[in-house]
Image (cartoon, rainbow, N blue to C red; front, side, top):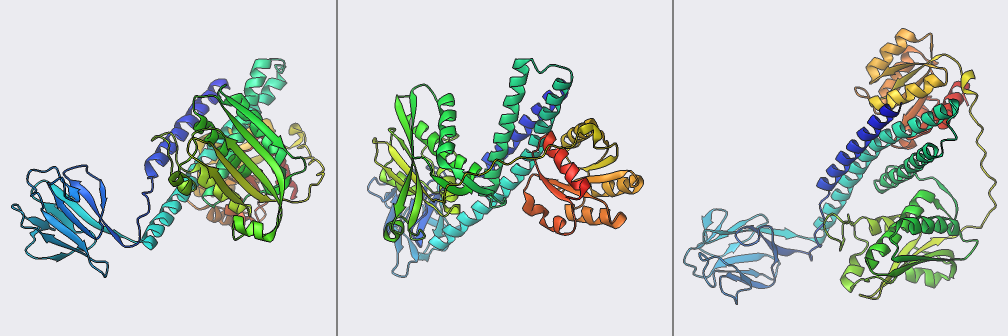
Length: 525
């Protein structure tokens, strides 16, 4: 068993590394948005390739140090050419009597030329520019398209990542059961290792939900959250993992409760703590987290942000005594992809995600910071009345030996997931059949329909869509029970569930969750 789990863990690490390497290669940092209808020259040859030069009212290009754009090219005249902006916003290029000439799109310039977006300008023989135009709307469109691409990337990563987590999580719970059966529960070190693996899997699953939330592909699960308790857990985690030069302090007002997604809020506060840690760097410093109730009047709420209304708010404040922010950094802090960290040290998505999470919870974020004087970031979220929620008691699954010996058809394109589910289901007393895609699933069901009591269907099948596979199975057996499994969230399964699928189970899951879902599907609950 251990070598199988080691192999699948290694496979998981390799695949996740590959996914995130792809993500790193796919996401390009956004340039600073230009002013409306400003022209630029991009260096294509000579000088620093890729350098962008903004064009003002009148710009002289030449070898002279007095030229507005000085070019270290012996083939360029001291004052070679001029680009002037006309009143209507167009740009005109003229040659200033250069000895080697000015060329536009391969033709020598004989008279003034009105520049168009994409024109190639060559001065002498070694220096070449491309003229480009941007406006604010075009920039916003590019940013929107880029964020859409990031969302699609996030969805793909999350789906594959959840498959890997399903293999790990189900195998951990399976191995835990095996250890219990053979009387090895007293092996404290092995038991602790399994607990750590299980906790890491659950945390990774929460991060996947954040990734899907950023991609706007996941439905969030809102509940009443005691903010003080949440902050206490995060502070405890920070104390265990941050370097010893950083001291964590908390000041929590009791009874501060909000309605929201726990994973999302945990990620937002943790991101702020990580940013504070990075601002302190290697010197001694303190990170303080404050939770307090703040009653805002309508005008106070509107002053924070126009979309807020008066009422009781939870104020979550993360303060550090690190390097702080200059005005330019403070102004751009919430922009996606903006970062002051070294290349490879930050994606520029941390504070953008915090901002998005606050907005999705009908709240707001503000920054107070000066250079070399630390930073304070406050999240304001609407409060809800505190309630003493009764503990949720989940009925245990039926005894595994009593769940039956019938066959369950597993449909999933990921071999590791099929092997893991088959292993767990066999221990529960079921026979299993495995199919990689829709056509194979339909053929196996038709061949074994007398014994197949349930189909576990992942909606991302190899050759047919999940909906097509479901309909084909129902055409062969109108009463067949189907338990839908997916790592992309229940919204992907809405149509299949509406068409009669029994239940939905989100990846990753543990053995007890699978047993409970199987029992519920078979009993028609």
